[in-house]
Amino acid sequence: MIPRYTRQEMDAIWNERHEWQTMLDVEIAACEANAELGRIPKEAVEVIKAKADFDVDRIHEIDAEINHDIIAFLTAVGEKVGDEAKYIHMGLTSTDVRDTGFCLQISRASDLLLDGLQKLAEVLKRRAVEFKYTPTIGRTHGVHAEPTTFGLKLLLWYSETLRNIERMKKAKEEIAVGKLSGAVGTYADIDPYVEEYVCKKLGLKPELISTQVVQRDRHAMYLSTLGVIAATLAQIALEIRHLQRTEVREAEEYFSPKQKGSSAMPHKRNPVRSERICGMARLVQGYTVPGFQNVPLWHERDISHSSVERVIFPDATTALDYILHETINLIDKLLVYPDKMMEDLNLTGGLIFSPRVLLELVSKGVYRDVAYRWVQRNAMKRWLQGEDFYENLCKDEDIRQYMTPEEIKACFDPKSMLTHVDSIFARFGL
Image (cartoon, rainbow, N blue to C red; front, side, top):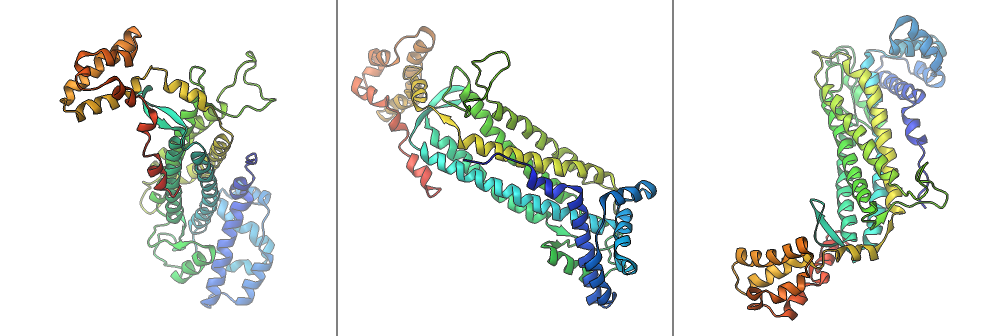
C-alpha cells in the first residue's frame, strides 16, 4: 500500500526557518574559509559556530524598520553571537548568501522529486509486466486503430519516466551551484577560495562566472524540466480519464468502499484524482513563463526576479511533488478490466484487422492502392450500413481471386498483431 501523501518533507525545505538556516550555514562556512586564510581569528569562528542562531519574528521586526531582509537577518544573528558577529558576512554581498542558500534548497527539493520519480517508475514497471499480454484496442484520433496491450501503454509511461529521471538529475546538477564573488562577481572583496570552500562543504559547485547573481538561465531550465515531468503525469492521467468514461470503462481509479462520487448522484465514480493531476500539471507548466522572464536582468543585477522566485519555486516543486505521489497512487491501485478491453477490441466487428488483410493482398501481388480500395469499400459497409466485415470480404469478387475465406479469417487474430511485445519489453530488461 502506497502511503497517503503529506507535504511535510517538502514543506520542511521551503519553510522560512529552514530558508534562513541555509543562509546561516553559508555564512558560517564562509567564516571558516576566511579563518583558514587568516582574515578571521579561528577563536572567533568557534564562538560564531557555538552561538549563531536567530529568531524569525525578530528578523521580521528589524526588517519592518530597515526594509532589507538580509541585513535584518544578520542583525538578528549578531544579537545572538555578540562581538564576534563583526566577522560574519565579511566581503560578501546579500545575494552571495541568498543565491547560494536558494540553490541549496532547490537541490534538496530535487532529491524529493527524484525519489518520487523512482517510485513512479517502479510501480509503472510492475504493472506493465502484470498486463504485458492483456490485449486492448489502440486508438488514434480517438478512433479504434489496431490492437496493442495494456502493458505496452504502461511500459510507454515507464520509458518516459526513466527519461524524466535523467532530466531531473541533470536539472539538479545544473542548479546545484553557489556563488560568493561579491557585488558584481569580480571577487573584489573576497578571495575565490571562500567560494570554493563553501560550495564544497555544502555539496554545490562554484559558479564559473557570475554577476551579483547566479544567472537565471539555470533556473529557467530547471522549471522547464518540472514542466516536462508534469506533462508526462498529465498524459498518464488523461488516458485514464478516457478509459474510465462510462462508454469505455476499460480501467478506472480505485474507489474506496466509503468514497462518494457526487453530492447529487449516488451512482457516480468520477476520475477525480486524474483530473486533479491534469489541472495541477497546468499550474507547474505555468511557472515556466516567469522563469524565462527572470533571465533578463538589468546589467549586473536587479531584484525583479527575487519576489517571483520566492513564490514559484516552493509552489512548483511542492505541486509537482504532490501530483507525482497522486500518480503513484493512481497507477498502484488502478482497476483494470481485461474483459471489457477485449469486448471493445471486437466492437467494430473486425475492422481493426483491415491492415492485415491489406498486407496479405499486397504480399500476393496486388498493387497497394488497389488493395486498399478493395478493403476500404468493405470496411465502409460495416461503418455505414452495419454489414458484416468478414463476410463481405469473403464475398468480394476481387478479393476472392487472391484470398480464401480461411486466409481472411487468419487475419482476424489480435495475437498476430502483437508478436513483438516480448521484443519491446526486452529493451527494458523485462
